[in-house]
Length: 415
Image (cartoon, rainbow, N blue to C red; front, side, top):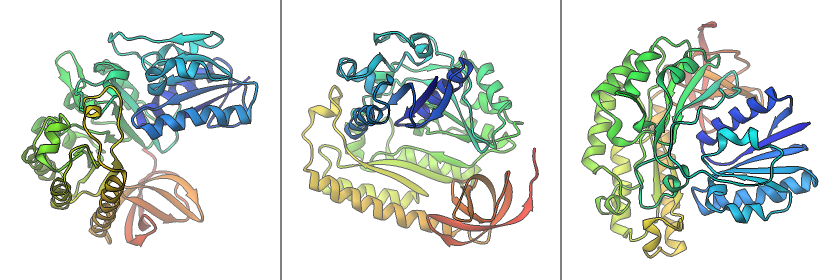
């Protein structure tokens, strides 16, 4: 039988889907990633925005058109949020909540809605099947932060962490060129008295390049930076979600830092990694955000000098505290989003320009239109004419497409 896993949403979902694919293969299924014709589909959904939920529903219709008689298993955050709505969809046999992914393979052939609202221990998953270039290693799930706009803590539950020995073993045995340490809130990672810095020290001699997933601002400490410096192949790229550069908006968002806190953490990163990429998320048009607030956000983003900004309009999530606030008009949100996107494009170009003529470590990901595409250690998209089968040292030549054109300077060879 053929099984397909279709994934929407975050890198954690990607990682969990990879684990499901590995499990299906071990059960003897012919496995594909996407929406090819199949006998059974696992749809891993997202609910971080209204648009993400809409795409989850649309995916079911697409599956029915491709394979009218296939069974559909719906799992993930959107399934947790609206289980009965998905259960009523034609061809859907199983609806499994966000905390049931470790049990999905056991539910194949069943019928019904399966939810688990407990916040027990971390649910160990099979190491996912990975590409040669990049592997996502999940170390944590859930969130305790309860930002006023975010529904994820209500769907994935409270923070819980993987045993350090298990996480370290997966990273140390990783055969991909890069391992990305991921989770819903890896800043809260802990195993007994050990935290994220201890995990980095445990894998400091890993053969693969190590990149951290998104961090909370207050997780950036001297201890973490010292540990990162010990890692043999650490990627100096830090994703620190800002969300707003206005103090009043940060308070309404229930973010647990001030602008001065953010400045101090960025300064600490640059003390240890002067050329580090600092990337972020910013919400456009949060309820009650004034024009003055928005201009304050633009000015702060300019001051920090982000290398990339993921901008998105505020999306009301029923059940969150922000949902009680009056929304801004759609045209206001749209105008602010476009202004943010324009700033993000300029800042990205300015950051990348600094590396023209410099040598970077290139990890190839795909070949397309005569170029090998991949990323540098500081998360610059690089284009290399010709092929590269493994990580190589390259020199950035000039701006090209959405990144930099590069040429090989020296082969690293296989590690």
